[in-house]
Image 1 (cartoon, rainbow, N blue to C red):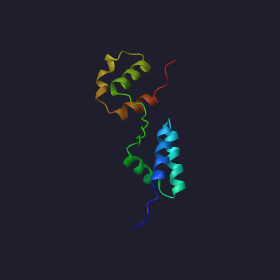
Image 2 (image 1 turned 90 degrees about the horizontal axis):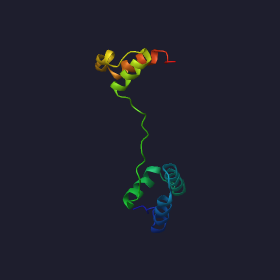
Image 3 (image 1 turned 90 degrees about the vertical axis):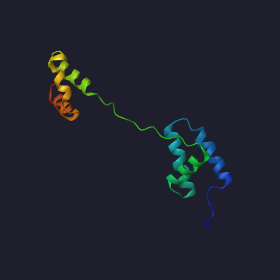
Image 4 (image 1 turned 60 degrees about the horizontal axis):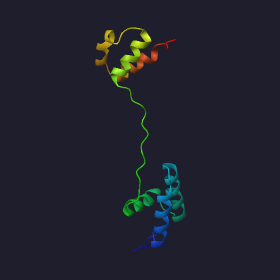
Length: 108
């Protein structure tokens, strides 16, 4: 049986430093630091923090996604017509609406 690199002392320092990190970037830096020091993968350090109950899942950054109604509203604005006049375009796919919008010159 191999000896764990996560001694009680190492675990205590890891948990303390990770818990003290105030941002996602700082927490990631702690993960990478301990992975390098302990010569293990970042996933191993993350798993240890999960077992200790202190791991904070990183938020995924999402691009702002416009609804079809919002895309039709932007089209109406660029074409200088009412949204009601283009209402049936809401049945089109988002991809098609996005391409049409990209092909129109910006309103001045």
